[in-house]
Image (cartoon, rainbow over all chains, first blue to last red; front, side, top):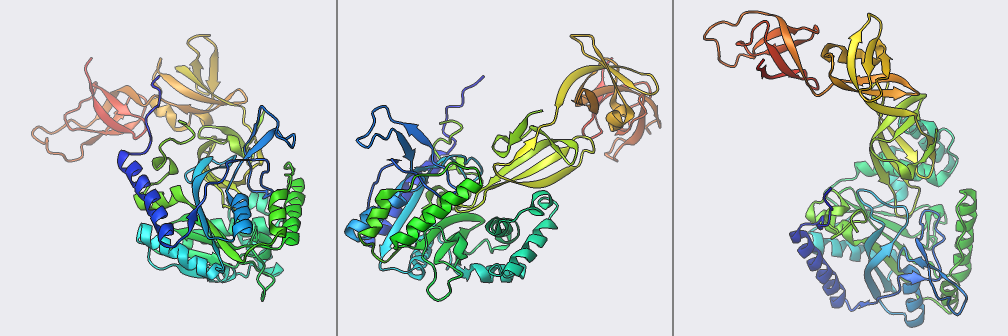
Length: 325
Length: 189
């Protein structure tokens, strides 16, 4: 048996990867956004029920008595503590780790580009993401469309009404691939997310980046609720060339609301028979000390490179994927 | 039979779907950054041979199928069953017409075939990729007509009909690719 020791990525791809890192740093240097480099190992994980931390046991207990350490799924909480303390524009380009993800677009360890702009709303940040895509991938101007409008345009259904969701569920039941479990699915967000992936995403124009805005309140994650339309949040997502590329928020700043979202996540975890996660008390304390109005976004760096290289799988742009790591 | 979680899905895994044993052909994990993950799976139904697509919610379990594949050599047909033998244990396995299906026309005594067994019973017979069979019937080729005209039909000893070049004659043994049903070459006896 031959042992697979060689990098999966061509040398030209590794050179492109290095160029990309330099370009990202140049992009933010020109905009006076400071690079930060926060921890990968944390005493807290993430409550989001669709994300799972890998954990490790530290040999020497910390002052708190903690031994279990969580590999971070994104640097979000740490960066928000820096924002709460100093109120400055910051970015980070670093490895993050998520349990349970291997696939064409997934490797459990990958590189995330995350940045925060103080005083920006989500519309301003969307414009900046669009500029980055143009600069790095020659992307044309982004098509911005709300979650609701996107369902209306591509599916003829309204995702924000109960009757609309039921009608979407019926459409999914008609799909032979989904009939088995969709007829019993009661969770509104699952129905919408499956409809989005299976019936809508594939219809997006390939040549233009598409930004979906105003996700339903129940899919707000860590975004603010819209002041004028409480049914939706100020969360957005970028798609380009069939790839989900970035997720951003006009950031939630209210500590009470943040605590509530942690609780809701853990409630949902219980329903799904997933272990609950301790709430990151340091993030909550940071928000309580006062948090600047800001917007932030996390962008999959390897996926951006996939687009630039025309790669079919993430393994083509990583020096080593988990299978040969 | 064990259950498999979607995280264990991979090509070749045998699972039960719609009461039928199936083999996973392709498994793609679809995971939105914030949202329900699922597996888009292509499966081959092992009895009907149909390939269908199914989308599973990630984290769910699916019943495994008690399916094994065995390399057995073909012995004979008794009119009802086709009999195969394990060359190591000498155990014999009869397969019915439903399991043999189209493979019938490629079965050559002593050839090693791949049999798929579900709960101990054959449900599929896969002949070797290449078999050697004698021509029992074909028109005599016309002298001089060697241009690529697409050849002529020839009936083989098992009843299979394949297109052969014009120069190939009755009594000759030819090599055939069973996957495409195409002539490969003449075999020197």
